[in-house]
Length: 318
Image (cartoon, rainbow, N blue to C red; front, top):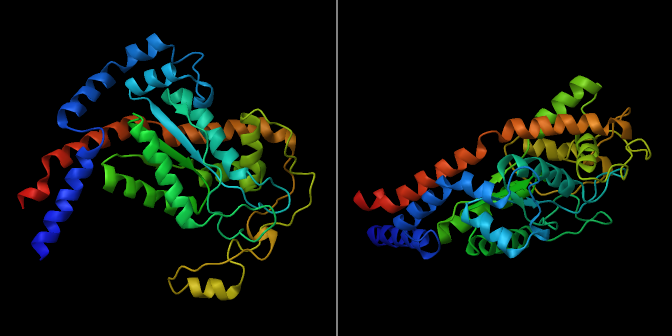
């Protein structure tokens, strides 16, 4: 029985590796040659200076050229949820849109429209929050990933900073890999490092408010958020609303919960103003580029290594 299960699992994995593109070692070799000609293709298609980065305004020929050179596609994932009483509902989406705007020219990538509505987490009952379940989120993300990959994209990077998205994206990546053999990855800008640098320069961590201020500036929407205009309390918690929840967590368990105060989610520290946006944007850009440096090369190498292993099927030789 154990041997039969092993054979079934091996058959599934080998089938996943060959059921959709890339379909064979020969196909992968062809793709490698295409990648080797990437610099020439980039020059010929005008990628670089003046590069068009938003897929929603590109035409089918432009996207075909991007696919042929194995160009990276960036897929932002955000959320529409309560962020205390002083920040907008789309905060998490703006954070990753700004990051993608920095990454796309650097990686010669294109940005696909964001997946905006994901499971929000503990903000579900708060006014304005649009809540879909974790299962619905995972299924939708998988469907979008499959559609993008089936269309010919070979390198897909999901970009998200919304906390609950991390676990759901991980499940989606693994589901797509197990069923198709395709390898997409998830990238998150370094929120902790951003907060550290902001605190060092501004005297307070400021957190998501500072990152939102920077992001709106980077997205061409400067002035739509004024952190000094609305009074909001400093962060309380963070996250878990009761001492009993923290006590339970000390026993090494995970637990569901809702925020019971707006500032359970995002706090507000005094001193941040709209005029700080340009400098915050510089800090955010630096942090994004530092963490992302070398990622495309590492991603491509990992794909080749993993696909070669799947072709060699060492599990069949045990």
